Image 1 (cartoon, rainbow, N blue to C red):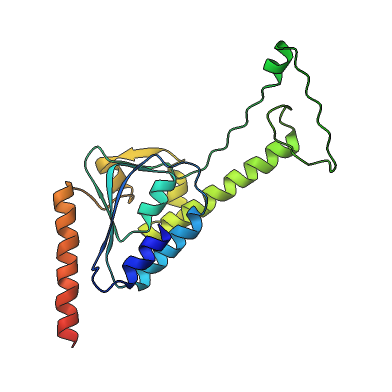
Image 2 (spheres, rainbow, N blue to C red):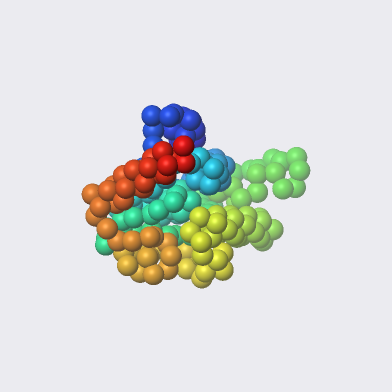
Length: 201
C-alpha cells in the first residue's frame, strides 16, 4: 500500500486517490507507519484522497480511512472500533485432561511469558494491558489528527462501531452518500484543483 500511494502521489497522470475499503481490520504489521505516511501525503501531496466505506472500515481499516481527506459511505456503512484487543489462550486445563505435561525450561525469568501452556501471570497481564492501552491511545490521536475531532472524543467511543448517520454525527464520516455521488465529489474536487492551477499560472 505504501509503495502504491507513493507512486500515485508522484505520478503526474494521477489526479486523486480513492480507497475502496471493506474490512473489519485485524492484526496489521506496519499499520501506524503507513497511516502516518498517508496522513503526510494528504497534507503535502496536493491530491485529494477519498475513502469509500464499502461497507465496513473498522479498527485498522478505519485508521486508514480516518486520515483521508473525505470518508463517505452508504447508510449501512460501519466504521470505528477505535481500540485494540489482545487474546491470551490458556490451554493448561485441556493439557491436564489429556494427560500431557509441558515443562518450560527458560533462561531469563520473563522469557516466553504469556504463552498458552502456562496460566497468564499478573506481570504479563499488566504488560499486555499497558501495550493494548498504548495502541488505543495512539489510534485515537491518529483519528483526531485526520478527522478534526479530539482524541478524547475518539476515546469516548469506547472502541464501538457506528453506522451511517450516527458515524457522521460523531465526526467519523463526512456524509452518507451513494458510491456514484462520492466518486462524483472526488471528480469535482479534481476539476476544481485543475482550474485553480490554471488560474495560478
